[in-house]
Length: 119
Image (cartoon, rainbow, N blue to C red; front, side):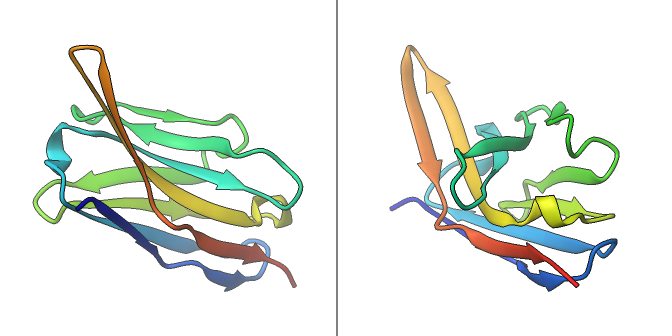
């Protein structure tokens, strides 16, 4: 059974930092592309950052220079370091694992962790 379990969310003041983690089980973590997505109230889910199995990263323009995605394949864990947080970063953050093999896609989501940026 595949499980992606996010942790590390919470309430932080503007300008503060948080580090999200996503612990994966039930998959061969190292071969999956991983990503963080977020969904604010009343808005669609949006991409925050992705990292390929080879370590290449991609960021939404809104978080470039402030967020850093990383992975530890030995620990089957994905991270998102979030610095200089803004109120508009408030959302539920979701971890995603994605793999395409011979035209079949394996796509898994965590349950989400709430991040609230407020003074």
